[in-house]
Structure formats: C-alpha cells, structure tokens
Image (cartoon, rainbow, N blue to C red):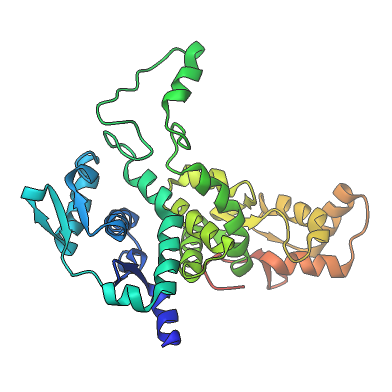
Amino acid sequence: MEEVFEVLQKHALLVQGLWVPKSSLLFPGDPSKSLARDYVLLLFSKNPFISYDKVNHLSTSRKEEVEGFLKILAIESPPLKGWKLKENTGENFKKEYPDIVKKQEQIWKAGEDNVTNHIWRGAKGGPGRTKPGTVIKSEKAGNSDKVARKVAPGAHAGRTMSDETREAIPKALKKVFQTYKVCSLQLIRKGLRDLALSQSTLLKADARLVVKAAYGADASEHELQDVVSQVAVELHGGLFVMKSSQENPECDPLREVVISLLRVKDKLKKAEVTAAAQVSLKRDITNNEYNKVMSDFCEYKGNWWVLKSGDGKPS
C-alpha cells in the first residue's frame, strides 16, 4: 500500500480526504487553467464550501475560469451564497491515514501564497491585494515612498512573482541545471515544474522551496529571464548555462573565458580557447581543466566544440 500512496502523491493531491489529479498533469501547456483549478482546489482543501466573495472580486477572465472549474467540482447554492463540494468528504481516509493528510496539508500550505498572489493579480481586491473598492492613485516621484506603502507586502509594481518565488528560483535552478546543462527559457519553465512535481510529496525544506519556485514558471519572459540571469548566462540562440560549475568550481575562470567566446560564436576550436585563456588568465591551461569545462555544456562535432542543444535531453 505504501508503494501505491508514493506513486499517487506524485500525480495527485488530497482535498477533503479525496484524491484529485494535479492540475499540471491535466493542463501542462496552459498555466492559466492550472492556476484557476489550483485556486479552487486550495479553497476546497480548507473548507468543503466556497463562498461567492472568494470569487466575485476576481478579474472577469479569471472569474470565468474559476467558475468553470467550480461547475465541474461543486454544486452552486444561491441560498447559501456559495459553492459546495460535489463529492462527500473522505472522513474515513482522514482518520485512517493521518500522516498522509498532514503531509498533504503541508504541500497546500507551501504553495498557498503563490496561488493566491497570482489568482488575485489584477482583481478588485483579495488576499495580498488592495481591499475591494480601494483605488491606488498615482503619485509624483517625490512621494514614491507613499506609493510603495500602498502596495501589498511582497508585491512590486510590474511583477507577477512573489518575493518568495523570486528568492526560491535561483536555488531551484541549480537542480534544473544539474539535469540539463544547457537550457532554453522554455526548458527552464518545464524543469521548474517537473522538479516541483517530483518533490511535492516530501516535507523537506528543499521540497517546499521548489514548489514555490515552480510558480515562477508562469511568469513573463522578461521577468523570468531577469531572475534566471542571477545564476545563469544567456548565450546565442536564447540558451542558458550556469555561470559557475557545480561540479568543478575550480575551473570557473576558464569557464568564464569559454562563455565569453560562446556569446559571440556558435562553435569553438581548442586553439581559440587556449589563446583567449592566455590573454585573460595570463597562463597556459591544462588539458584536464579544458576537457572539464568544454564537456560540461558543449559537445565535440566534426573537429568543433558546439553548444549542447538545450532540447531537454539529460546531459
């Protein structure tokens, strides 16, 4: 039975004692739908009844998405002014498997802030946003501090990520780049989601971190790239590599030389690397460090070193 639960928790979440498939599995290419469904499941994980006010202040498009999932998962009750979970709660399961219930509660708690922050963005009001009816007026530059105080804690103008997510992504990226040495921005998004999926059943601090980081996968290209650039460098073709080697940090000086060359060229020969290293490092490089650096994110083809494809195949 333990093996069954282990597999189940990789692909499903517990809501009121009932197992439901993870949204990322149902809508892998549609983060907006995944977010709307996650919001509904998050609310139901707390209470089998969702009041109208949890939905009414959402933006029009977001409200439509959320109500679409409510119609699937719940029954509307106008007299009670809300929605009731369609299925009876699994009280027997809760009593029989309290450890699993507790673990699932931790998973919901770890991702709660990011779900609510994303779902309420652009809404009239809600958790992590201004209260319904509040108007944020523009201020002159001299009063910018007043504007800042009117922005909710953890939120910044022009951002779609919470501060927790922005802090978690660089740490999670180290794990992604351990698997894929060269990543496109699309592969980074996939890597963050896959990482969260694989570790979401664990209670370790690292697991909670990658769950938070996964919400950054839905950010705009500009904002995600801004965070990625903290630990990685973009080369030609929109491909990224880590600034520092996790396996061989002692080779980072030569790594910087190679990265500089690959930012302007799509293939290299040893003579070019050796010459550039003599200029930058003021010394001859060894074959050992050369091979370590080049094989990390390049492959040898037809007498040339070329950047790995970043196509998602583990290196």
